[in-house]
Image 1 (cartoon, rainbow, N blue to C red):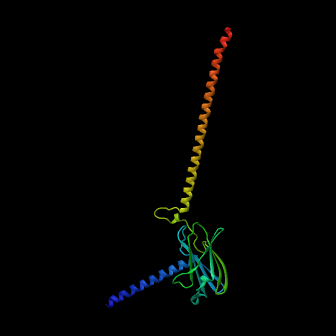
Image 2 (image 1 turned 45 degrees about the horizontal axis):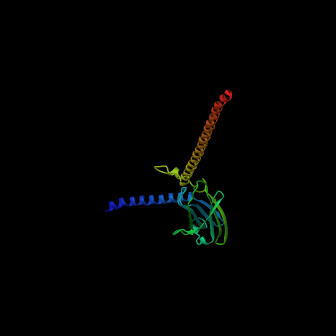
Image 3 (image 1 turned 90 degrees about the horizontal axis):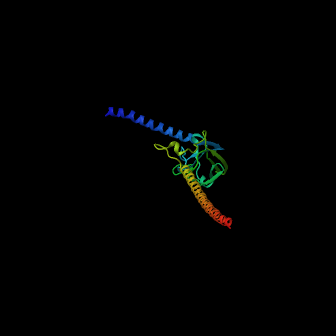
Length: 224
């Protein structure tokens, strides 16, 4: 029994250390994918809810607010009523509805679906415990994930974004409409050509008849 216990203890120790290291790595990865910013006595952490962020996949804003530093830092709750958030892409802006993240004090989230690749900006403004806040956090290599194409991460088959498929379908429809117009125009031109040819043939026959009649009349006049 003692031998078994002696063998099981190192095994349990290895398992515990492995779990701890995995948790530490996960924490570091999560932190590195968000921007940390100190505003007065508060630390604000902002990033995408799901990273890497993929175009046309459900995602959102993840916001964490802590008061103090290090082990003494405390989560700040109740900010869903005093803070507002917006997501910005180029010159487009959409308001976001912040709500507390369940089971995570000091954490807030707001869902949306990014529909374009590139950099996004989260605008956080309002007050934190009476302190005015007006900060913008923009995705990038030094902050948090930009929105990536779905095609770049698709496996085993490369899947194009729905917007690209819609664009291709629109171009195909435009091409088909153009072809129909050209076909109709060609048909009209052909009909006009037939009409012109028929008219020319009628005029030519009339001219031939007139010439023939004149030829028959002329000898009679000569005989008289």
